[in-house]
Length: 258
Image (cartoon, rainbow, N blue to C red):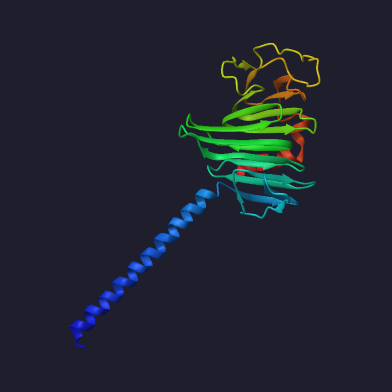
């Protein structure tokens, strides 16, 4: 074989190898992008006994560090356990001991091309640090008796075993309502409108007669009873006894790290 033919064949082999490696790298990159898109959330911190499962699953599985969190997942913490979920848009959700959440939707695209997230707290205490959302994004955290729409907030929501609920806003603004399907309700502002007392409703099912929407802002709280009636709306302070707990201090420290 003369030198000219050898050089031509060698060039062809090199070109073929380069194309092959290019295809492999492109496939790997596409796969990595797909995996990242599917992993809309990660367990970034786990202390103690933390478990997760899909809604249709029977058994809870250990939630390992950096394991994925997806739409349809349930996550729970047990006694003396904590967890931190880092979601796709760097939103943070932390779970206190003995907390259960259902991730109904996680950045799912609606028919109108909006991004929609819905997290339900079955019981326990959740601290959320949610980045600012625009009109194309919807991020709700719900309790059994109310739904909180978040536009960019640091908040804490606590749900007791009887479904009574407390929402505290440390920074930003939250719109909370016991009638999320109603769009014609006039929002009430804490400190401006008088708060109605609870109503007793006859019959086998306890419900609230009053449908309401409240705007809860910096260092304000709202407390609801098990029927979704308002018990208290007021300001709070970091010097309050409830703010001196290890749970609150730990979250404030974690927020500074982020």
